Amino acid sequence: MFEKYLEISEEVQNALKNNQPVVALESTIISHGMPYPQNAETALKVESIVRENGGIPATIAIIGGKLKVGLSPQEIELLGKEGEKVIKVSRRDIPYIVANKLNGATTVASTMIIANMAGIKIFATGGIGGVHRGAEHTMDISADLQELSNTNVAVICAGAKSILDLGLTLEYLETNGVPVLGYKTKELPAFYTRNSGFNLDYAIDTPKEFAEILNTKWKLGLKGGVVIANPIPEEYSMDNNVISKVINDAVEEAEKLGIKGKASTPFLLDKIQKLTGGSSLEANIKLVFNNTKLATEIAKELCNLK
Ligand code: PSU
Ligand code: MN
Image (cartoon, rainbow, N blue to C red):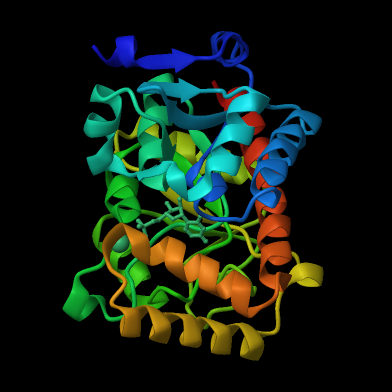
């Protein structure tokens, strides 16, 4: 059915066939999450981190209407260079972009969908979308959360930025039956910082234990994803007061300008990077590397269980 729209690179196909660990990677983070050239450089470095740790990277995007799993360095460079000109694609955007043979940068939600079609279970990124502050009025809730409740892919992230209402995000995930598991922590990390003040139920100490939980969930037929929350390494974490102030200013400005819908998250990310003079970008890059390494380790353990 969907196969005619899907294009999996030969390397990724072979890896999947031979039960080798494959790690999915998203492309909205490239086109809309970071400035050029750091975006493309980071995406390429992330791929090499997967390889160094014994896995095969599968960066996902829509290119000329094809759901592509495993991009060439040229395609990654294109997504980085074109930046905001590449359409940000979440679940609802896929049909239009594919039917019109366009390029699209995939969010966590749409990357999960395509990874699942390809048979990839582990996906590394920076942060997930969530329930936005003020969502009780705007109803701005990322489609990422809905996808996590439906699609069997684990997302390794550094929690979520406090551009979101982290408490409501956790409530939403709980309602939808999505496990949120901390790596060696019982506190939801807040992306730039290791702490958020919100408790998690379970701290998991090893990649093997994560793999066992994932395997169990899916063997039981409990559909949906898992959020694996991996705190930013201490040495790269930002000062909580500094980053909270910047985020508050960014959220206030977005409200003043009436930024809404899919433009909201990219606007806030860009504003934060500008207001911190690049130090947040550095933290962002480092935490993505950290998540990539953990994701690869979990992918390896999951292969061992099969
Ligand atoms: N949060 C980040 N960096 C990102 C994103 C979120 O810290 O790059 C991107 C991801 O692709 C995520 C998307 O899936 O933004 C969420 O967008 P929205 O809130 O419009 O669903
Ligand atoms: Mn939204």
